[in-house]
View (cartoon, rainbow, N blue to C red):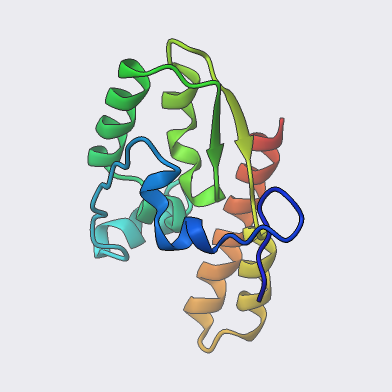
Length: 143
């Protein structure tokens, strides 16, 4: 697959080979274990869908707050609805950056499709509920 970034014919390969030439700084934050029993119960009984619970960590919240308070940002891009729990932190940033939601999938639809072919009554019911939770979240986020 040929990727383009910028001028016609300019390859993205220099970026892939040497991203430090394009970024001033990179911050890496470890992610907690996903699909813990506590998260599964919270996803099943609460209002927050399990996919968000799996991608939301206190360590990431703290790192994001530090970064947004230290530096000024014009734009912050959120790559997936799974990261939407960080939106209030971004909105509270002193520089009030523009937020772009770049969703590659409609996760509620994917979960609905999964619920139709999942094996087992509990799994199908859980997937339908998660699909509904994600759909509400997607609509609310787009407002």
